Image (cartoon, rainbow, N blue to C red; front, side):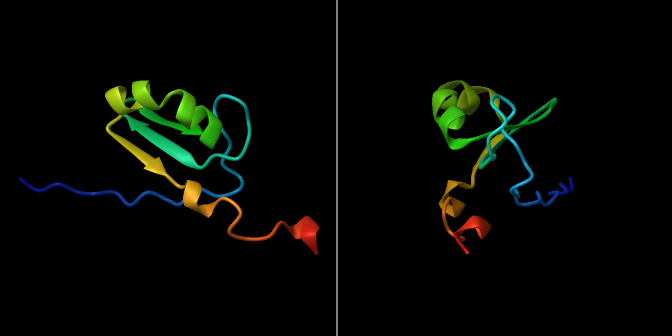
Length: 72
């Protein structure tokens, strides 16, 4: 049996939280699709996501890794 793993694109600043619209740093992959969350909402729903999701990706390590363009 061959399994194909589809590479998942890294979240960008254009990806927004499905709950509040803030920048998304977490992706929950479900059978029906995916949900994107900011870190706040990912923490709020962590237990339910870990039970329901096929995979949960945490990209919060990227928070504040690049200075804001407004800093220049």
